Image (cartoon, rainbow, N blue to C red; front, side, top):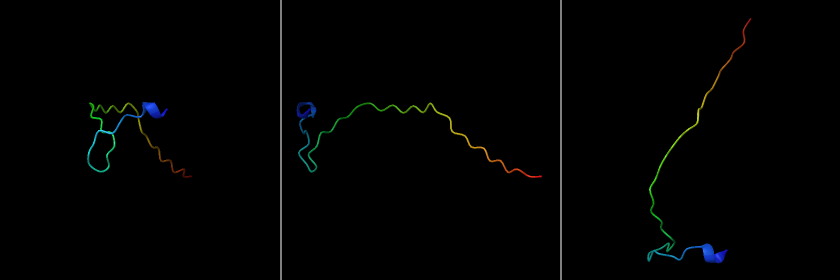
Length: 40
């Protein structure tokens, strides 16, 4: 498992791995709310 972690590629703190890739945001969900107040 440890071999799967990429080597660090940053020389400043924190010297972790930085990956830059395309970003796609898709929101395919529905949100709803129903308020019901029963009366006589």
